[in-house]
Length: 121
Image (cartoon, rainbow, N blue to C red; front, side, top):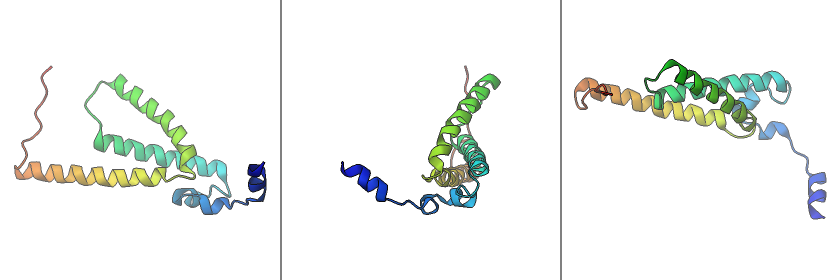
C-alpha cells in the first residue's frame, strides 16, 4: 500500500545515476551505441586484467573457452556497468596488477627474486 505511492512520486534522473563511462558514452541519449561501447570497454579491461593477473600458458582450445566465457560474462557485467562502477573497478584492478607485475619484473632483474622455473609435467 505504501510502496506504490512512493514509486509513483519518485522521479529519477537517470543521468545522475549513470557511472562515468555511462555518461561518457551517452547512455541517456543513445543507449544502443552507448551499451555497445560500454561492453567493448568492459571486455577489453577484463582481458587486460586476466592477462596481467591470471593468465597461464595453456592450450589454444582452453584459451578459446576462457575468452568465450569471459565474453558471456562481460555481456552480463555490461548491464550492471551502466549504474554500478564495473569498468572503473576494472581500471583500478588493471593498474594494481600492472604495478605488481612491474615491481616483480624489476625485482627479478635486480636478482632479489629467482626467475620463474619451468614446471616439469
